[in-house]
Image (cartoon, rainbow, N blue to C red; front, side, top):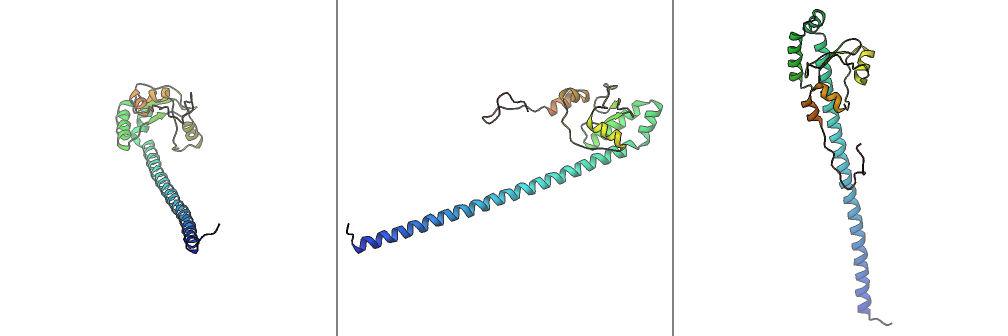
Length: 180
């Protein structure tokens, strides 16, 4: 096949332009993709660090609220004298003021003496609860996040159990029959 010089030049320029275009597009896609992924990862990392800081501050506030409540005279007097009414009012006020979902007083054995949210339910043992057990063993305030069963939440009040209820929705990637 004989091609004219003009055809050879045009084809050569087209090949050079096509290769340059492919290399440029490939490089651009990878550079932009890496930059976008890097920025997204940085944003996620910063958001997670912010969430950890907010969580830590909230846990510190809960620790302070429980620690300061535990050393207040009204609590000690109420427990020693058996006068729960004044203690109940103050604990309910503290629970609401501090934004606590649960504020429960137990004895040294982990038996519930008073629940600020649901004062009518007491006498059950919280000794097997991991956080209560740790606090009893350490002899100090312990704060943590814990998933409670619906039955445990109902002891604190049905409104709290309803507030904490999460409806799981099946999605295409949701494993069949999984209630994780």
